[in-house]
Length: 277
Image (cartoon, rainbow, N blue to C red; front, side, top):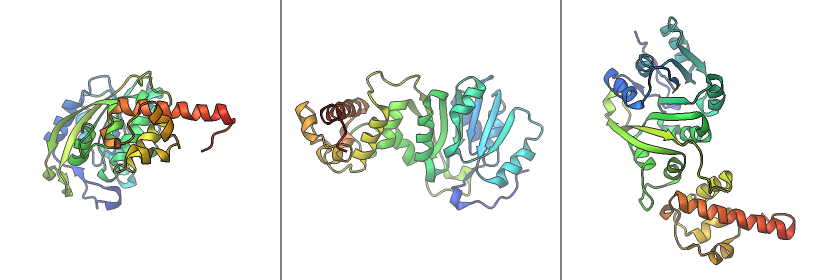
């Protein structure tokens, strides 16, 4: 029987309480017999029980010590379940995948206030992740799938396109959670890429270009790119239209401009022996 936990607002806790929805999420996740699953924030274990019906093993990462103790007791007789008391944002996904000797399937009802951080952490470990199936705020889920040029297109949209193939599974009503959130939810599935596009010259620089230009999304690239490098003239000479705004660029566009910035930096080093940044 589930205990009546006092929900911690600081942890963004909204526990899923509908077994049919939990079952539907797992069915759409692609988790199969033999899969090693990493669950993000298991809460009271509603989703966990459905995952264990099909997975080889479930490793769950939970930051709330009360829930860790509860789940250890709840699944004491289940040797295919392991609970780890840890902040998922600093959890070594790649280390677990290496220990398992295979890519992981991730799943979870993600705390809405740290959705961006969780997704970026997963993308940082994309080589160790096969899929991520998650419950998100509907607005954020829509943002992930937004095309260039739309109002909701942003950093997460570009990152999602860069690191995965994404699909929205279905919407989820507020009533399946306790406490009931103030926003609608959606279940999404991301299939992480096997390898990055060959034409990426510097991944960290590409991320910097994406973050910096969207940090000033209302400004033209002519102004926002200066936060990365003072290379406006160099880019314009190579035919880049810097009157555009970042939300008009697709992944390929960001790769092309970041590669050009990389070329400018290398030229600066070759000319001066040191960068002027």
